[in-house]
Length: 224
Image 1 (tube, rainbow, N blue to C red):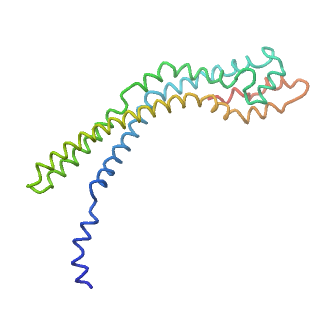
Image 2 (cartoon, rainbow, N blue to C red):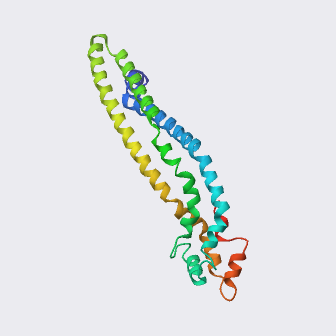
Image 3 (tube, rainbow, N blue to C red):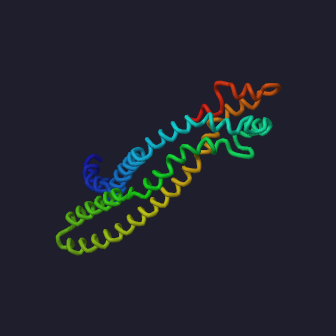
């Protein structure tokens, strides 16, 4: 039995050695992880300060914006209805609160997403495949090396074309997600303020509007 196991070991070792597809997946995993980190850094560097500035501007203007939706600028019944509907009634308080942040992002947002964010990813992926093909060609038998090189070159051309198409697809996905992200700001503000709206909406009776407006914690205070 032991002798048989020793005879089978070289065969099993050959089967267990990682093949080309495994090596390609491993190489592309590295490229994908590096690219994800690079994109996070790019977005953070381009947008983080702008978002903070927009949030600070929104916070500074929040009470003034809120008061435009409250008496005496609006009828008390309209104001109460706005609170009951979580900031969405005849006009959107949430949209008004989001406006300062959006105004800060407008000039920066398109410039950020028009940049060649995926060029390095494409270069890295192509470089990984070129390395793999070079190793494959060098490891082929001398009699087949020239033919193997021709097949490797054709494969690389197809790989380059495929990577270019993947880049285009990811670019479209980023643009689509970017537009979707910009539309989520108003619902996000509404979600943050929902408990405050609920708390303010239950204040009823004589002087309720005055109490709501004089409260230290108004719906506008949570917009950071």
